[in-house]
Image 1 (cartoon, rainbow, N blue to C red):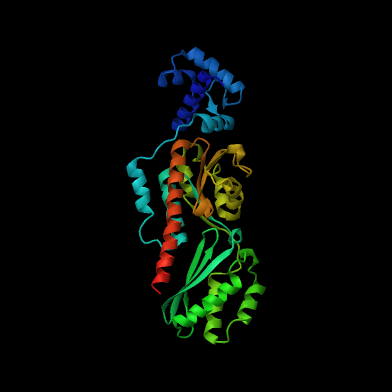
Image 2: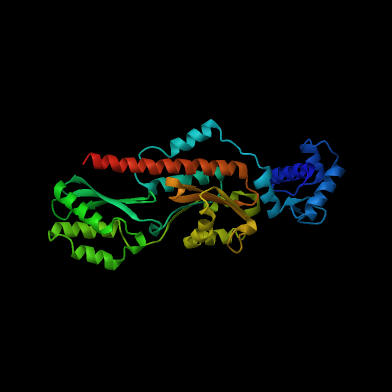
Length: 350
């Protein structure tokens, strides 16, 4: 594509993102100083339409970008839009504070990203069988309560407050911790079946309180469910976008949010590169999503903890959305580290 066509396509996409209205040659000539006449722009638009980068929704109407046009824009024309310092600080402040569980941080991040973009937001924590048990820690709080912590080699932390059925002392809890690690450390999460758990309980030390604590731990933290945790927010925010004010137009997305397994099916293939991914319209692996785009970014240790993104119209402001998604993903990665530190501090204070 020559430089003039690139300039015209860039102008059409920017104008359409702003107005949601088909763009004519006169509007491009008036708003963008391309140094050529409306007639020349009209000829370039005709060529771009023949090449499949723009389309004419109605006879005598202006043009709007096609999926191919948006893809070219995202790959070759889009300039990174840096967030303002106050925007970055607002995000940092919103995701700091007393957050000691990753799930709490995910819920807060989803709500924040939806508010900042006015798009529905989706975040996923991976299945447990994506990694192995690295270590189990039992933190003594008092003789009736403790914290059970499971560390994964992918950096995932699961922890739960457990109540002891009988008074417990630190030494006995330490013995139980050693026993559990000898049985579970190194196993894939998918290998921790009910039969494995039953065998561990049967081989536990004969002290009744230790067996009870083992059962409680396995039930609360090492349950056999492999369901991925999906967090969604702002499903109705799309109604603020002019092209989606008709509820029927949004039906597919609303159905998507009702069946969260479909969210995983869509986002997981997009997140496997460990890089921010933009999928546009027909590129989405879900029927009926031709009018939508997704921006998704991974977060966490080596970007393997999960992913967060937004679902919006193909007309979304990609440059700003990418910056917002990346910033929040980066803060979620810090939150993973912060949760690790919190657990370590609890262990040191034991």
